[in-house]
Length: 201
Image 1 (cartoon, rainbow, N blue to C red):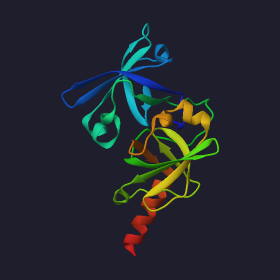
Image 2 (cartoon, rainbow, N blue to C red):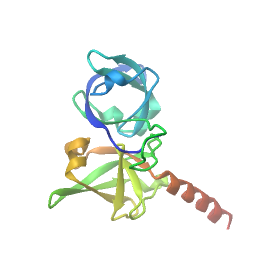
Image 3 (cartoon, helix red, strand yellow):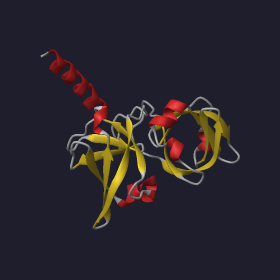
């Protein structure tokens, strides 16, 4: 379980394709604190640490084919920055919202608008997958816990302050950038319950 509060945007220093798996090696400030079998969110995707090089401050995780197909991890290149967050501990404040690290689908950035020191990013997603946003609700974009504004049928906006812009990989986004979305877990349960109820009527 994660909170969507990104610790840092770290660069990929190695990508190795092995059969249908993809091994990603990251360089980050807390790599020497990690241990094998620990969970870390990468652009909102929960992956297991399989190797740690404490001297280089690097670690490696593995993404299977299903993860590659359903997320933006397969689109990444060496040098790209990835939003990282270690899993929550029981004594940690929940500053964001409940994020499972299970990406629902990807979306595309279709507009970036400056707004007197902050930015509005607009994302478009495939509505046929049954996911929705609600005004002022929560959504995870590349693992970042954000508040939805201007919620529409298959698009929504988020407002990004300078701190978030610089800390996360939002500063690398362009129109056309593909991001990972995890919709609010509470909203997903309510939607499923209501869908089942309406089908019976």
